[in-house]
Image (cartoon, rainbow, N blue to C red; front, side):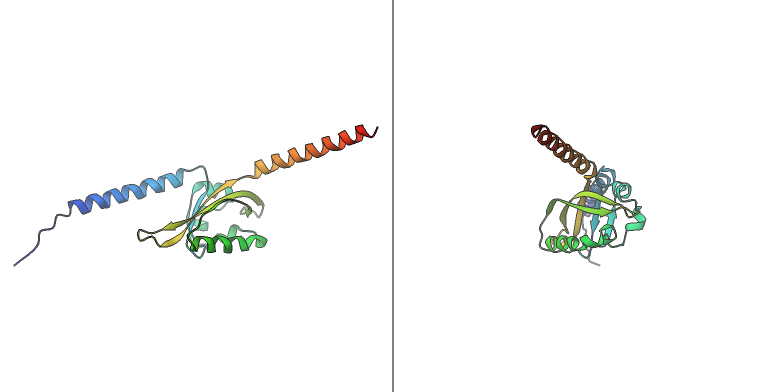
Length: 161
């Protein structure tokens, strides 16, 4: 009987470190204040953190395995096509301002950053999206522009007197 003795302690240590790293990354995503979503190359949701649930109104179990297009308004569907094409090419999309939909149908102004997700071999296996709610900023800017326009009208009216 001939056999080989293989030291698997190093393999077990590497596997344990990989599991620790995966657990750490999952904890970072789940505890983030920013909505973080991952999806397959065809747009199927594979992760949905609590911040995404709070912003969009869909619980994780409602979105897992569903198309991300569920939260994209009909007139914005071409944006997802653009994102998917860019991701397939290995590109990132930074701070793309757009509109998404809450579960109740109300629009949400957001800024989206999209990055390719690669496996250990470097192949693109999906995308991650980090979303920021910019609704309050947009409302504040609209108010500033409104006030500037009002002041300009008042100044023109006082000049004509």
